[in-house]
Amino acid sequence: MRIAAILPLVIVSACATVPPSAPPPLAVTRSPPMLPTGLDRVLGQTARGLTSLFGEANQDVRESQGARRLQFSGPICILDAYLYPPKGNENAEGVVTYVDARQPDGRDIDRASCVAALTRRKEAR
Image (cartoon, rainbow, N blue to C red; front, side, top):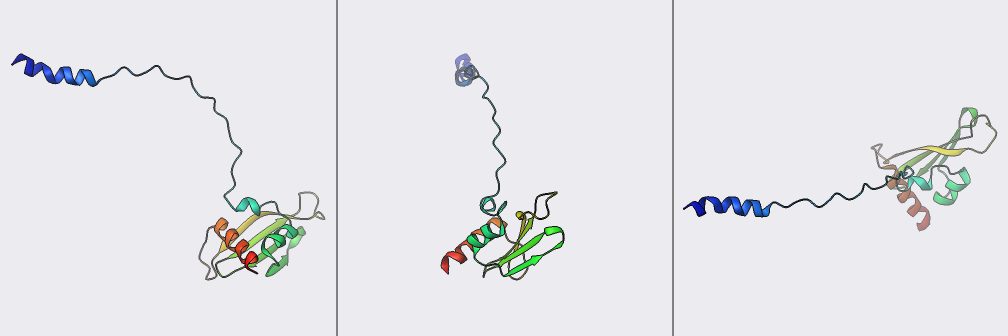
């Protein structure tokens, strides 16, 4: 009977293992921040770059201090790209610093998905 009382303790202790020695710590490297997929094709582009990517803009609005908004529309979404010249040089060509996207009915849509849809729109032409 003593064996029956000790047997569960023996089995449990047999399952316990000594953890292996800890490996040396890994060196931590920082990756550059990743842009959302698809937006990296748009951010930093000039108006010419956007036109080659999407085709002609549906709207081209010049705003104050050299700012410009180009709008590209497709059956899935509408993309507004905001271009600004470098600070202190308002005569230089603007680049995209921000994009906004929405569905034709005004509901939100993922900006990268809209970029992909508009790129396919141009390829279909």
